[in-house]
Image (cartoon, rainbow over all chains, first blue to last red; front, top):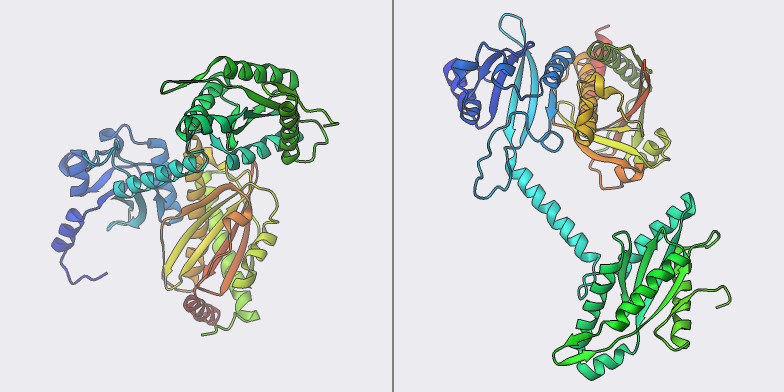
Length: 316
Length: 205
């Protein structure tokens, strides 16, 4: 560092730089407190210099701070804190009251050990305002989460899509295979759905799909996973459910669809559904096999005359 | 420019310099934490970029799915990036000793990993730099991942430099084992600095 500038100039720069700078002794007595610290804390250098930092800021993590200061002095090594783990050291207001949507200034800090002019060991703490970074990272993360949620959903009905359902089923499958437990998969297909489209138009068909999924979701548990498998076919993962529990649920769904028509413009669209149910058993090789069983059961339900629930049997 | 790797003699001195540096680090750490710290003799080796991931996986016996990685850049006459890898138990037991209380939860664990990395990397490199009379500064460490398989932490990517210094250090505390693997990646220019420093160090004896 150059000494071409006099102490006055260096003092000015330290005071006015757009970074918080404070110097403390090992007992956290304040030696230096620059203008950034003054402006943000409303505590002047005159009042704080020579006193213990924790007296003016009782909310600081005292025990941690003492350890930190001691550790940098002992190891004679810089130390850092990041807003990602410790959002702030000093609870300061941020400078984005209009655009922020945050409650405080985010800070990155550096702890720098050094020796004072009389050989005393001191620690310089620098404080960077990283609120902008924190806000943009939060926005990116939110956008990412929204996109991920969107990519898991069927755009029309808002229920999960096939890809997400298969990933979830695979996880559930592995869980019961490793830890035991019950797992069933229900397939549902709306009967004569093509007729709805042909008679009332595709918008009516869309309305039917939306309302039917809403109704199923109303009686499903939060842990059940309803997905649009394709067209008018839906799959529902039923964790912790065996065939008898699955049958009760499947019949409730079937009855609900049968007795609640969908109203579209002046039309009353009566509906029925066919359902195929199957349950996980030891030795089943994959989640695909489980899907396949339910699909076969659904096929039999259709063949037997629709509007019914069929459970998978090994000879299907 | 193709850099000559360190010869056998230079490697020996480097090993010695790192031993001394880590010894000092261990002593400071023991004083800081107020517990007995047992430090293994660091193992130092060089690998080319091509073998980097394989070597590191071998070093940490890369099975299991729960590793934590922290990276930290260093710069000035010696420059590069350090990577610390922690096993499943991480350094949980260090939490109390480092002044973290239990109620801080997840963020506290992350911060602890960053702190410990900063201390280990700093101790090791400052020790080395001091002995060979080279300037060294550090940037803040950042978390690469936590609770992940090793290959997710060290995924293959383009690396600018093709020489890599692997340093393996194990720390044991009284209360139980805690181990950390340190990997340093240095620029070619700083390997030259390292060499010149090592030669001076040797000649000063």
